Image (tube, rainbow, N blue to C red; front, side, top):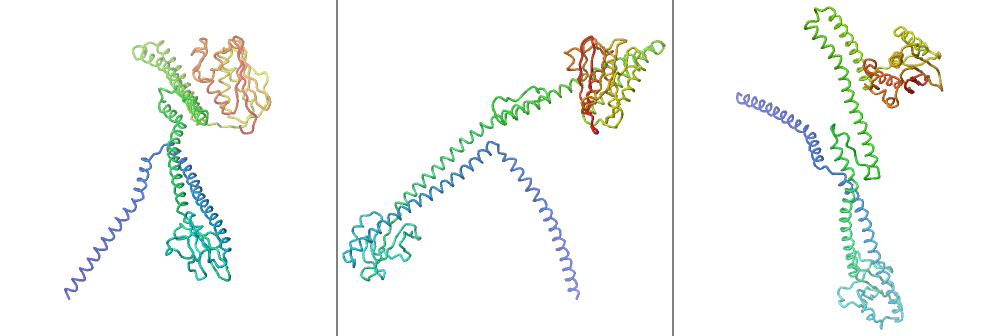
Length: 500
């Protein structure tokens, strides 16, 4: 009894251990199988990456495949057609000889004097005569043991399906109530030789054509893709330090030329943007360097001995506050331009009357400037849908410029009116004007005109850039007309729409 319990306990532990092993094995196999698709995917990717075929190779392979398929079908058609042509000739030949034999046999009513020797000299053709019992009566073949009656014969030429080497035709004759069968057959040895030679010629022609197509196709595709190779080489040579490099567009006159011209235009834009960015950073650094240097200079002076001198202390504080204010304005303008470049500057449009905005600007300007005549000649009451704050900022830029460059007691006019479904905002001054050379560049960032427009009078050169961006975001346009020593007229056109 104890042995039985021990055996039962042992078997239970054994089955538990076996179950655990099977469970572990199942988990291991599951993990391995889960990795197989990933490994196969990586393997296929690596194989595909190593077997990287060029466009020239792909073009050659595709065109060669198309040409070889077409050539193969054409060759098969020629070979099969030539085979049918040979068989048709043989069938026609047998039909003619059969007619001659039948006519000749009819002259001998009982075929006693029928002479088959007249057919013995015809190459590859055998003439046999069988009686009703299918026994051989006459034959042009010397070895009579190999002659047998073809039961599947008909009055039309039939090819022997056994070896495709024999074509025969059988004609039934009724001579004096006796049945005879005239059976002509022809060996296709000669025709098969012709057919084999023709097939061999077609085969070698196909091989030569295929090799010729591969060679010519490879050279042609490489020549066609040579501009792409040159474009790739040139593009790889383009870098930040060599943005002036351009693709050659004079080689081809097809879509590749269009692609090269498009890439060149893109490179022109990149180069222009890069140069503008460098110029912007350089100008911004220059503009910030001056106030920082001034602040640092006054701070050092105060640190050394200026704090004990009341006049120096007041002068330093005034200068530092002035430069800090200028820096704040410059930084705000730089941040505005940065947001505009990233399209993150918010535009909050509302409906308002433009005449109220014009009156507001004129009133505020008169409070800070008593040396110029600031007025409006035309100020129509028109409701517009725009960002009032930004539009006011843009108009302030133009008004401030007119104040800076118009001599004392000069005239500045701000008008608003409707013309051809457009709102026209017009700023007219009697200032010093802008030269023709400077006029195309006045909206460039940090651009200042001639020597008469220094930093003290001309600001940072960012205001007009900001104003142009604001008008552009309102789908508007700016026209500037100016004559030296006479004045400047700026016309801003905004479309009259409910939603701009």
